[in-house]
Length: 282
Image (cartoon, rainbow, N blue to C red; front, side):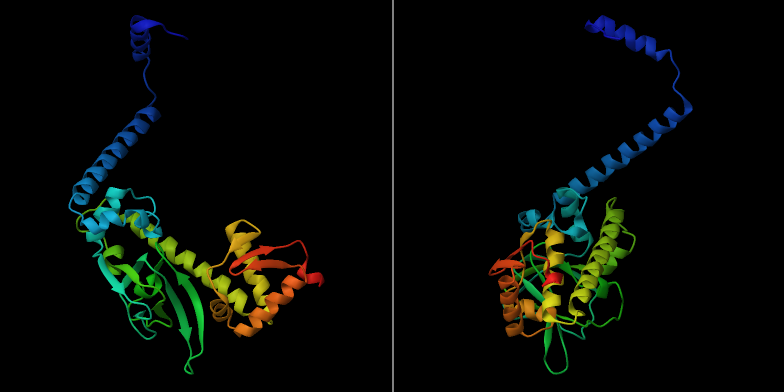
């Protein structure tokens, strides 16, 4: 039915008002009203807390919005969460260690600036790179969630680093301040740890291959899938790639040259392209 003018509209509304709503619709409306009230409360609490946020926190919002821990939170909620989580800013110089193997930590670290290598070293000093992290990445969640667990990796700054640390207990326990977005933080923490476990499983599938060629193909193929393109850039230089795959740097360079000669890949520094040749037939 099409209405014209205010009088017609009023008539339609009056007519519809005589038709009773179903019980289910009444329930749905009550649920929506309750949700709206909770959302309004959530917004007002976040806005009030955000107004007291330090200036440095506001300048870091573009990075913080990309942090997995804060997924689903708006800017006011992120700013409100920082003091609730005991956020502390720390800085490290190039070569300085943020954490050492054997340390025990009760904090989650979030990168604001710079770059770190997460490395695993054996007794004789041989090392492999577990991960290279930059702004908006986080680390140490699993160790922080396991009280008394000693790190099996070290974290080294490869550029000047600025991080935030959060107390894991402040994330895991029910918030005494009744922050309405706290449940979302806990959900995001679980998702972050699960994602990191998947990355470690991928790494295990690379390093357990028998030859350098197989390791390279497995890693490059996985990166192509992850980035959704046959052309992609990896976060490693040659030495870092060798450390990541637990092989010798010269072996990596030699095998990459062979793969290019065979028409399987092409590359320029850290940018790679997978070609059409099937490596299994060569």
